[in-house]
Length: 137
Image (tube, rainbow, N blue to C red):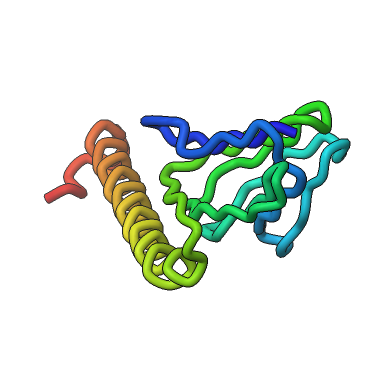
């Protein structure tokens, strides 16, 4: 089956003869072989591994994303960031730790932005609400 891992900027990895793909979503680790049922799932920040047609195992750290099995013969992964390396220890250590920190910072920034936007909307509502004249000070 064909495996393709894409980021917004490039195709990080492409394997035209993948025999097995292992990934992790919020329910845990799972495997995909040729003929797998259609599937769409959200990936965790994790290491995705695959075995090519020669039996060689490869790995990519992915910063979350979406994995889709298409027709049992194609696995497409879209992720914000992917680092491909055969050194599993480095991927599971340094790279995943950095990706988790980045993901946490982005979530915090989005949460802060949402709170600021909600506060601004409340102020605008109070300002334009004829029943709240004088409450803004």
